[in-house]
Amino acid sequence: MDKEHVKGAVDKAIGKSKEAVGHVTGDKKLEAEGKIDQAKGAIYKKVGDMKDAGKEAVDSVKNAPSKR
Image (cartoon, rainbow, N blue to C red; front, side, top):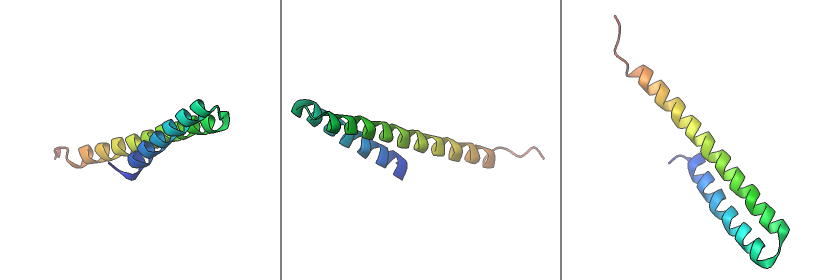
């Protein structure tokens, strides 16, 4: 896992906790912060996925058989 995937997973976990605590305590602001953190986590995951796809594309070009 790269740092984007780790950051995404952490943000999602923290967000779920905040949302749950906010819901139980009736703190709408904390609940909203939790949802925002989860969205940020999803974005970090997508960035990590895009970086992985880019690396895989470069590797496939580097490892492609030569046509010479």
